[in-house]
Length: 415
Image 1 (cartoon, helix red, strand yellow):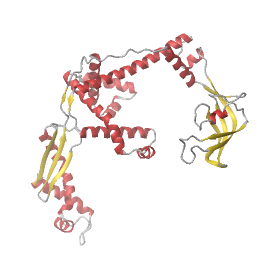
Image 2 (cartoon, helix red, strand yellow):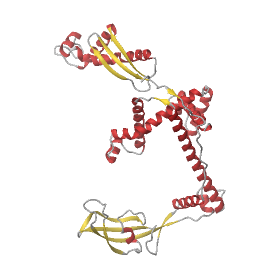
Image 3 (cartoon, helix red, strand yellow):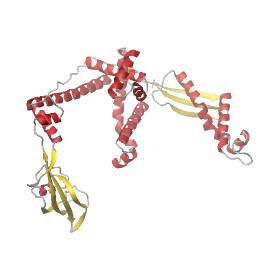
Image 4 (tube, helix red, strand yellow):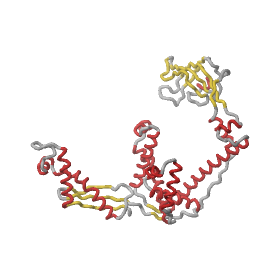
């Protein structure tokens, strides 16, 4: 590929000899040679005992940085992934490195304006409003003990139960004061239906069968459950009234009609946000398919590794170790890499697309604008500007983000 360069750098002469001397001074302190204090053996004695080859890797470390800088100067390009390094030759006189440097690939923009994309208009139906109102009421429903009456669908029955298969207690099939929500289908078919209609204190025998798709040693088998209802709880759905609206934080809403109007507005805002995201995605997808770019597999791999690290950080925030996640899900690093590769490819393409648009549109911001934006972001996050820059890295990254956002706006405005 055009953006891949192999640069060979040889370090020899005085520079290599100095590196070997430094390697000897480091290594001699770590070994014991008969007749000499630790660290005091002359170089020729050390080499006689351990060989000159034992100094090579340390010496390579001492000359690596300078060799890499020379390779970058010769390549006249900034790497976008960690360069690959091969030690081609190493002996007492010199070391020869080959650096494989991958720079940003060349991007040829295709059509990114007037692509004929249309943004959907947000609409909310009466049924959607009613469903959202019901969801809100369910969310704020209170669970209250049911003093009289029988178990109904939607109630939570607090039960004691014990299962028997072939006249023997079922392993793991016993529970006390277990809260079973009727209608949740938590237990095998027929169990919850059998509890419906029971009263507090009532004991009942349920004769059921395990499903044919159950675990191998139980599927299709008959099972008997002894069930006792200890308590019945019901969900009290709040009424649509002024008190409920105030509990939701709507102090200015007095009537049901006003509440329904507010719910409609919230749903419209939500749908508009979803439509906006879908429209941006459509613009990015079509414009990136119109451009020409050849992306090295190494660049995709680098993005995948970045995504895996982000995923690992998310797991840590939930108190889960990556190793435990792998064990629980049966996932491997290879499978995770393969799973994330399509998304990584898309992210890289979109990034190069937006950078190319920013260049084509000559998008830029003054230092004052970047400073103002960083202060605004810090205020939004409730942190100081210094804390923001520590998280971001530098003002240059804030500026880069501003350019990317402006490039997205240009895509949206012209399609």
